[in-house]
Length: 190
Image 1 (tube, rainbow, N blue to C red):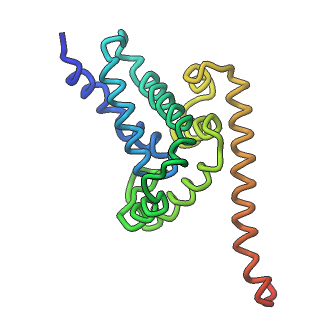
Image 2 (cartoon, helix red, strand yellow; image 1 turned 90 degrees about the vertical axis):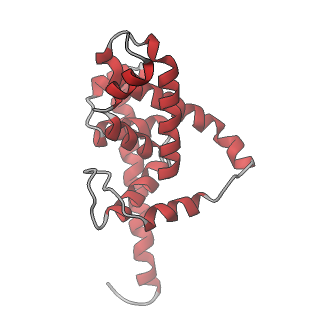
C-alpha cells in the first residue's frame, strides 16, 4: 500500500496550481490564501485514508478548502478583537513582488494591479457567493459540479452567482463613481 504522503503528492500534482489559486481567490490577501491552502492540505493529509476513489480527489480537495475557509470566516470575529498584524501591509508586500496574473497563472506587467482589484472586489462578497463566483468564473467549474460540491441545488448556485455578480457590479460602479468625483470637484469639465 502506498504511504499517505506519496499518495497525496501524486494526487495533488495535477491540481496544485489551480487549487492554490482558488484558495488565494477566496481570501483577502495572498498570504491568507497560502495559509488557507496549507491548512487544507494538512487536513487532507490527515483524512486521506478515508478517500477510496482517487478520481474523486479534486472535488474532495476543493470541499476541504471551502470547509477550512468557512471555519476561518466564522473565527474572523475573534481575529478582529485580537489583531495580529496589519492586513494592508501584507497586501502591500504582495503588490511589490512579481505577481502572477490570476486569470492566466503567468506573469504579466499589470498582474499585481489586476489581482489587487479582483481581490478587493471579491472581498465584498459573502463567502458562499465568493466561492461560487471563483469556482464558476475563474476555475471554470460547471453549475452542477458546484452544486454537488456545496450540497445545494443548481438553482441555488445560479442565485449565488447572480447575486454575487450584482454585488460585484455595484462595487465596480462605486469604484468608478469614486474615481470620477475628484475631476468634477476640481471644476474641470469632462
